[in-house]
Picture 1 (cartoon, rainbow, N blue to C red):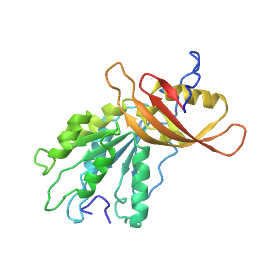
Picture 2 (cartoon, rainbow, N blue to C red):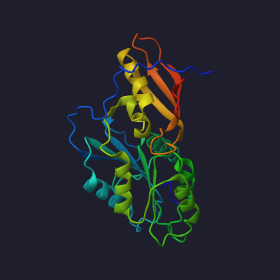
Picture 3 (cartoon, one colour):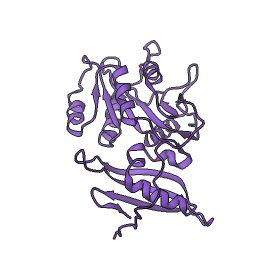
Picture 4 (cartoon, rainbow, N blue to C red):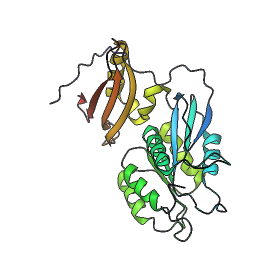
Length: 271
């Protein structure tokens, strides 16, 4: 069943000589696009990840917009490694998983994505996109959203208002929306295992790079992460603010630990 149908902190010590995480780590992966359909496991590493969010028709005779989006991403991707595209529909000829499993897959894929690409060709009679409204509300201020809709799409004024207020890129064709998504990720940056849960908006920030370089030097491994809050830079010379929950396996072999990392604008890392 389509889920998107009508249905007291101390400042961490930071040495100026601490090595930063490489933005373009060497990789043998050729620049390629890897589509992950609903229910499938993603690859162990990627340079960038895009989630295709928007209404899914309940009528099998209604063509999906997502193959066109995949084709546009595939044609335009020129990054340093693999681009993963999360596609919340079954593999051609396949079926959806159980509804609860489908929702869990979608939520996990979205939190691991660098960009949530919204394409909402809303037609209230055949493609209302009601669930898409909920997902837009959840992700519009994440710093990762891109919004696309054709000029004739119905009841889009509220979404477009907040896209403008939040600085979300807006386009009116599928290829242009895909292009906006790829401009957001740029060349990408290779991440493996638990690193995949750190979106590029946080991964590229100096406070995270310094913190992670220190952890790697200590032999620690990042097992998972979740962005709890994000605020974009206030201006061209500013830095984003974010709150990140991380799960770390210490290098001494002890049990994994859970930490919350706060990067406040102009204040570096607060933990």
